[in-house]
Length: 279
Image (cartoon, rainbow, N blue to C red; front, side, top):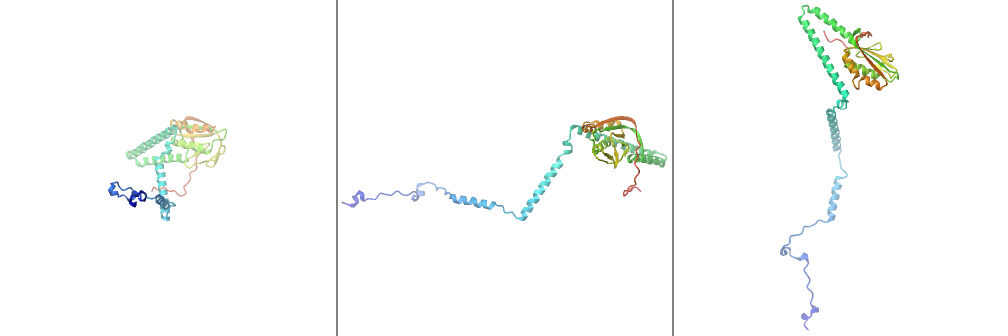
């Protein structure tokens, strides 16, 4: 029998492998080559290794600290400039009181301006300018003596009596009272026989108060010369002196008068360093 005709002697034909097919002949596009997963993981690790831990030089650290300080300073400056904390957090009664004080001060300054203008007009129109100048000088001396406490004063005003049975009124409350009276236009003040001037100070705790080193005891009596229509409302406004003292279990009584006498005097003290700059 012929070997070619023996079916057992024939070798089966092997199919061609896909990688051996001609891509051009089949017309299929080249498949994208995917990078191995191990290479992707290795790249991420190299990136993380380059970013962390950070390698910061000394110069970079100094620049970063300076920039942080500059930014913090600018933020604080902007906030302090734009935040009107003194008025934004104030109560309505405090705002009313501040507005009234500003109006009163404006009116007093306007009155002073008109008075000075009148004095200048009198000097310019007076036939005896030397005598007129002497009169105005004496009047100015008297006014300065009242402010300095070296001369007695009298005029309309109020009497403020503060009773403190529990001894809770401290020195700062009395100082606040003086400041409130000054803001309302007080021209002369006397507290329990002590003349209050520009350099007057209060010290001590409740029940042991001193004014300029002199001990005073309750009730505290303020004799104040000024316009009663301005002084009394300034003390009685909501959140003012009277309400503050009532919170300390004290009582404050205000009485108007057409004639208040402030006769407690302060000795004239020659300044140690200040000298007049006028020729």
